[in-house]
Length: 295
Ligand code: GDP
Image (cartoon, rainbow, N blue to C red):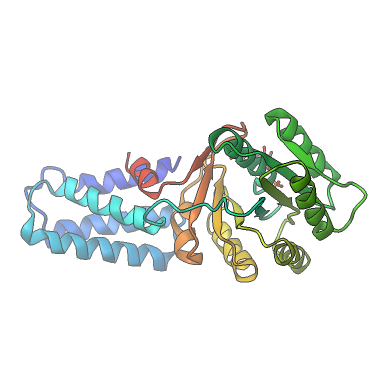
């Protein structure tokens, strides 16, 4: 994950190897390389500049008081700033409501259905919950089949209605069914399109307004870089979602989406998904991710 970024940052810190103290010059050289590494990872220019300006200020601030091991000092500053950029501390996840309703939104192919299954398994096995998965994609029968397959794989019930063309009615009926069957979490997997379009947005918005979810999670394919960030903005403007899920972190992603999505939409990244197996879902911890990037 983010191998290229990790390598480039490591090489930026090499500038400080053997230096006895931190100076204006070695800070400037290192910071320039850090900025280049971020741009290469598909971080947009404004964010990369702001980031490196902060790192520079912090390093200059430390210069007077702390001249021990400039390399280590710089790594620590960059790590703290990376964690801050990705949200600082771990986000909260609401399991209030009876049942808790979680709405899953995103583009087609972003990994919504896979994530819905992973989340159901996570809540069942780690939080002792009894989830119900809901197939609210009325356009692609294959999407309904896919959710049923995942559901039986993880031992979680799936609600669907192949006759209905009304996702709002499906969501409402599913919540009723959850109450009747003592399910305490309802995870609604919605339809996605290949690009942001108003029909899809209106549909998800209607579901949101009718079922009042505790969480609206926007699922984004981290392989898509800045496109992912732009899509997040479009969804957030209309849906005001509660959190982001980054998928496909197991692929050769450059890191731009993970690094800048929180900054751009000011919503926390709540989960990181990396793989097609059902048990590869992690709660997102900005500090751990920053640590991983810096190796
Ligand atoms: P949806 O259209 O948003 O519901 O997306 P799907 O859940 O159907 O996922 C689209 C494709 O991406 C499928 O082939 C999934 O197996 C794959 N996929 C989903 N999540 C991940 C992931 O975290 N890593 C990898 N490598 N593939 C994933």
